Length: 219
Image (cartoon, rainbow, N blue to C red; front, side, top):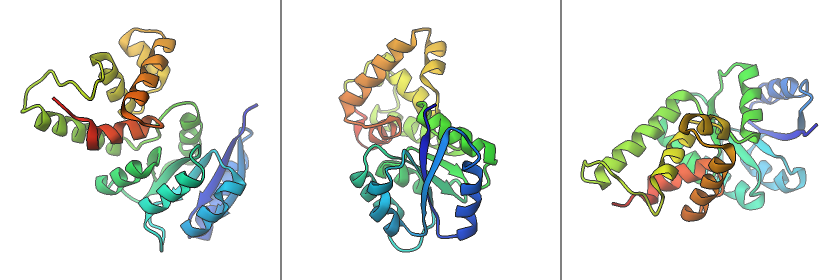
């Protein structure tokens, strides 16, 4: 059985211990450590080598987006899920832009948090529905602005099919769900996703969406 290695970063001890207690009961999750500050997380992340980092949004000290960038520099393969109090889209957008893979609320049901971790490791982007909707709406507004309010937008060399897949990825759809929706095989979806990443220089699904929102819209 493949185990997902998880590090928790939160300045509140009871939060760290609560999540730790939840995760330690799962056979496919290995709790590898905890950090009370982003600075300590940056220092230990290479040695602990987690697959997933659960990061509290409102940590004192180092700016969250900067901390995410530094963690990703130390351990590029680690995926970061931000735990937030609310759905403030600028905060979530900056976290995703810095390299976080997902954004969930702290009041998420414990089992849903576990599912978010498992889903992320299996190709899904963990995202609170409200935050995902905000990203989609932001994408649509930028698209209309760049295209003078007209349809038929072409995006940074992406084909129409690739753009369709990118929008589905924004909603958190898995490869299987995308394949089912657009009536192609999973292998075809994976091929399209690799092409999307290559064309816009993204490392993962979330960065692909954020990159497009910020830089990739062209007529």
